[in-house]
Length: 249
Length: 255
Image (cartoon, rainbow over all chains, first blue to last red; front, side):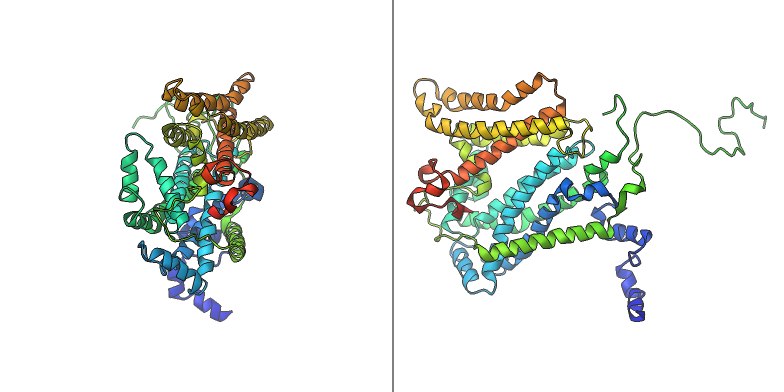
């Protein structure tokens, strides 16, 4: 015990962790406010807001899926070259000769579908619990943008295996954009980097998939969670507020 | 300095009273009646809950990944079109819509209107009543349930009927293309979406109840269209039962 104490009392430890052991109210507050990841959460939460039947944990599930996708995606990146000659053989090699390659690819694929699913269900949960109401309007809009970005992240990843499924799904998907009369052709050209799906499209989709969209997602997810705290925690808290007076919105 | 009369002295010196009533304001503070009784420290309970959710999700994902492999077809070949050629599943609602109206309407305008509507919901319904409560009230629950049942019946019926008797084909050459391909589908879909709202209007709904109807119609329709496009469209993008597809096509392989 004295060794443990000397470690946690050392200057090195104290420089990393600016709070004592979190077994008392002060240190349980400090751990939330001095840690950049914890500080997205409120220091105290209402018991109603952590009931499983209220939130169904869908927001956290979406974040967990995102983190898992970042980790498994990194493993895939290490074994993949985004060129029309290399992409498909790389995926075949990943599945057949890279240790746990098939498992990581499966985790990434099914995790991506799961994230889209939990994201949509989370939106439905927030709507049906009325959690978009003031002062949470802005966070609802951020959430809609996050859903669109999640679809974009999944869609750009869909092309990367460069098989028939990927090629024709992206051909069909991007042709929908081209129906827009004024900008459609331009949007399709910007996305694909040419008249049809080819090397330029693969390069662009890869860049968007591994860098641009995840970076914006990370930023907006942080904003989204921080905003929950700033707007008073989950909307379930509102039920414990004073009853509304006449004429008050 | 002359002594001020007690009437003019707003903040008398030496008084034990250190506060004063300045003005009465209608409103509530964040913490009114939110006593410490109902709150707990986030650490460690919330941290543990989040960890458990993450671990549970990881376990399910690993188990599923051990059972089912991600699909991989042949090398991409621009010369050989797959039949059917489908977008990823979450865009299959859009692709299904394309079968029922002019692409500008079904691929751009209607989805655009839907996204804008969803973003605008908190500004259209800005009352705080019912915030944090599933369906707001028993009446809201009933409205949602009946709207969902209505949409679950009418949207598949619309897809099947529109597929059997497509006005775009039947009216080709009889009326202008704009009427057959854009106006008629929009009017039919508009009636389908607004009908439950018209029925609700008789009982003087509040903004939240209107949103419940509109969002439920849109959400359930999106689910129906996605499932229809993903599961029920086979070769030639024709409607089949998912278990009875020609050429051994299995829609689940498109995941």
